Length: 95
Length: 193
View: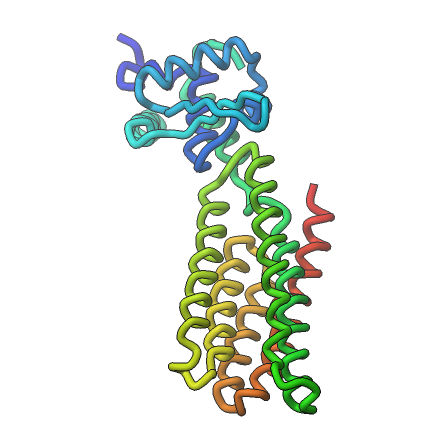
């Protein structure tokens, strides 16, 4: 049996956990900011953001700054709960 | 970052690291507003005081017309700043709404100044002091905290002098509460990477 059976598999991935940890501390962040801070490629980041968004962990809004399209992400209440559960489970292993 | 399997230690390290990346103070550029409003309001107060004291002109309040361009500049500047921000922290929002609330409180006060026998300046100093004090904590910048205290003390003095002398008190209070901390903040911002 895996040691990590209680850890949310959606969060137990380097990039997705990175994104969630970034978003937990801010009100909202643009795609380029997340890309810069995580060092991920645009393609991979898009895929992972979609997964988090489909699970209802984050909300993704697309808008325009002048003519430039901008994607903005923010964490949802469901996402905050999932992140807190993940961290609490993690604490259980460390203690 | 890729899809590799994380150990629990790596998970914790990643979370700490990422939270640290996002943890920062309020967006740079706060000094602009302290300097703009510090100069405009200090000069308007001083102008009002001098015009009334030496009876240069029978409508000393004409100087407050300076508020209109200051408001327009503030609106343009903050709209531009919001547009360029790639990330908005909770602090940024609290900071913006704190000042918006104080601005609305001051407008309410100005509409009711006859009810206060025109002692509104002392109350405005109190509101500005409160917001400056809290801004100091949000930005973790001590000179602003001290500036807020200076504005609060000035409010106490203002309540105990004549209405015209309140303009002089306010003018000095803005130098101590907005301009000195504002210039120190500008210096700190330019040293920040």
